[in-house]
Length: 193
Ligand SMILES: C[S@@+](CC[C@H](N)C(=O)[O-])C[C@H]1O[C@@H](n2cnc3c(N)ncnc32)[C@H](O)[C@@H]1O
Image (cartoon, rainbow, N blue to C red; front, side, top):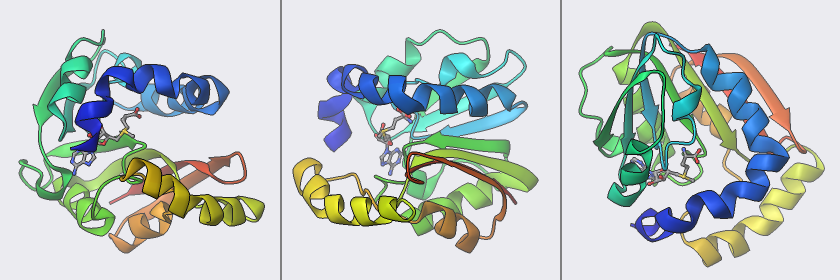
């Protein structure tokens, strides 16, 4: 898997984006969640220190090297890291009160199927909270459409112009909030089952 090879340099490579935009968006989103939480595509675990102490977080990722790093993150919440594929989540229907994820649906192979699984494991009324980069708006749409083929050819996995909020709605979620930064490219997407 592509992310196995990226794990060791991932945090350093992401640092400029974290400082420019992501860190602030993460801090707006993830400290607010509580209860039984599933984080999908946890990667090196950047969000784990942000969850409050009352939360119980199951964090999944397909990449074992990414998960090894996530397991070393300090956290106030109770965290269990599990290797799993988002397309086949090993949890019962309605097992979680909240599902979170960041920068995941740009790189999963089948976002529709993955969001269907997320919908299944959320309890009715449960919250979905995503921080994603997506197809931009206005000039941002032009930019992400132009850059997408080159970017995908270079890294082999990450799509720059996915319409993730639309796929969230198609999976059955009610869209509760959508905030965007930098030409609509970075978005906080909140849905409810
Ligand atoms: C761009 S990284 C984002 C990591 C982290 N969430 C963050 O915000 O920095 C995408 C993560 O999604 C994981 N991923 C990709 N496809 C997956 C799948 N089918 N099932 C579970 N995790 C997957 C990758 O292994 C990687 O760790």
